[in-house]
Length: 466
Image (cartoon, rainbow, N blue to C red; front, side):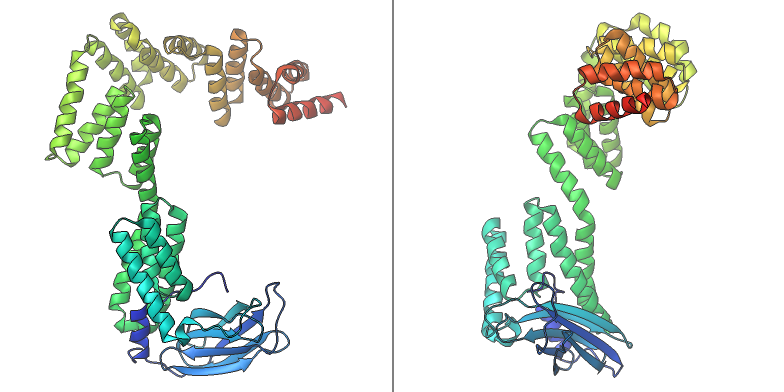
């Protein structure tokens, strides 16, 4: 059986067959190629085509190239099926032809029971497919998603061309967080609806409405996926992950007050109170009548007010905002005054403000001094901090500044292996200082753990030896 088919709903089939679509004489061409499971062409396969608009059927046998070509076909939507003794019958639904178009379809036949009926050849199979679909929908309503999925898949095994089945299967996948599978089911539905709409034209109101619903659901999948991940992170108290996911949600919808509310909750759990307050304020601004928002805002404000360092925190927040506004020199001018009032718990944010100002002004020695105090205040390994900074600077193309950061890291820990590696590469490629490069890379080969970096370092050393 072919792996992918266009889908069409029962109501659409009825609409077309009863004559609301008008078939016009044209010179459309339909090329059908039949191949075996290995892709080799098969001859003497009986290929049937049916114009859905008028039920007109035609058949041909494939030639030695496995081709059956139907010429001078009317504008219509066509069903194609093929039979050959010793092979399971296969089919393709649906191909839309209009305006002298040419379409090609490949059918893959597999060995098996050639007498098997296709769903459109046996009303009993159609009834069975409908019954299974109804049972599946009932199971979804009852919250029995696994049962519903099984029933709908059984229905689709009989009648793969029912968009209602694919739509409900997508709903199951969405509720089960199976996002790729939901997307595939909805895309199958939209492909068929496009073909049906193109054929029915002025009679396609219902189809267009369903298409719009499906397209909107497709567009919402990325947001739904991230929302589910954020919700899961909040339930598991992984608040840092939740903030990242909520950031992604805001990228899709920056005016959603609920996202700001939940991000404010996550940020408050991480003790990022200034950001939490900003978010809850945004949520209240967007939805001023929501009592949950105003209550949470009051709670946050009480927490901040209860701290003895309130004034100092506000001063540190001011330095942070000045950096955001690009007023870095003003940050440095006010730093000493803020430091005089800052308690121990504010040393990290305070030195971060000064470090960011110096970095923005490209005053690296002063920035490095501030960063040392920042990381000490945050109990972060200083050697690792300078290494991370070197990585950031290197990514921005500031190789010489990155070199200074790596060298600073090695001043603190002469055996910081990765700093030796990065320095060796900068010395060799940027500074063209082979002596320094050799010293750093040889040291990395001695103490390094990253196999890829060891290989690279060895290769560079070999080049220098030539």
